Image 1 (cartoon, rainbow, N blue to C red):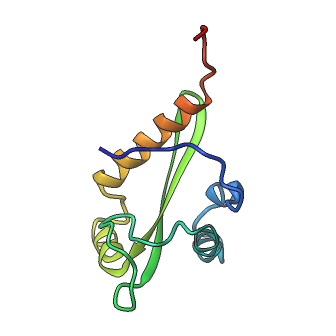
Image 2: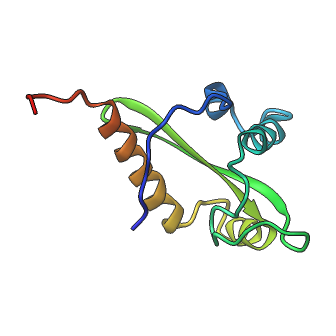
Length: 118
């Protein structure tokens, strides 16, 4: 199971998660934004680190609404994982869908105000 830590990301641009992928330059802008924040060190699907042989080849994104809150998760993919996603009709794998759901739940939990006293 993945452990999630909710913290503000000063370099992330939240607008990039809402723009359509089909618009010119959106995928490149998302990839460069992830590179500037340091979130592109490994493939989102296979979790292998990017090296001279394994390069960043694409971006995948899942946008959904949980508890009335718009959530999105973005991954940088290597060539093998991007080709696998394209063979699957452009659909994100169930593994990444589960990861997006867990991240959204962790984010919603972090937004929930604490009640009671300690």
